[in-house]
Amino acid sequence: MQTQNPFLDEVSKLTGAAMGLAQAAGEEAKAAFRAQGDRFVAEFDLVRRDELEALKAEIAALRADIAAMKTPPKG
Figure 1: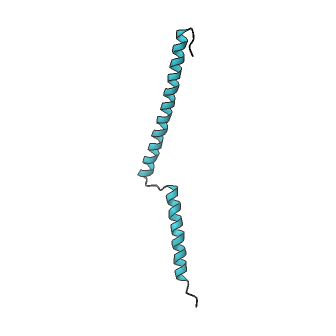
Figure 2: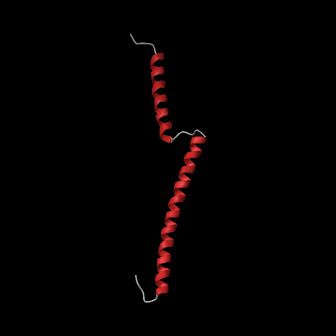
Figure 3: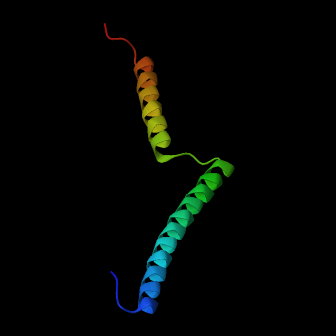
């Protein structure tokens, strides 16, 4: 948008540039926070939820197999 006042044109341009810069800084902050979280998880050797759920399912299947082995055969 162009006006007759060059000062207002410059203020408008600077405002638009500042908004773009603020958005880029926000994305950079999100990326840095996510990277810090990943480092935290790796440092403390934490497990992700999907890995835990898979391990729980495997343990339940093994317990069922053990229970089946403990019961005497019929006949």
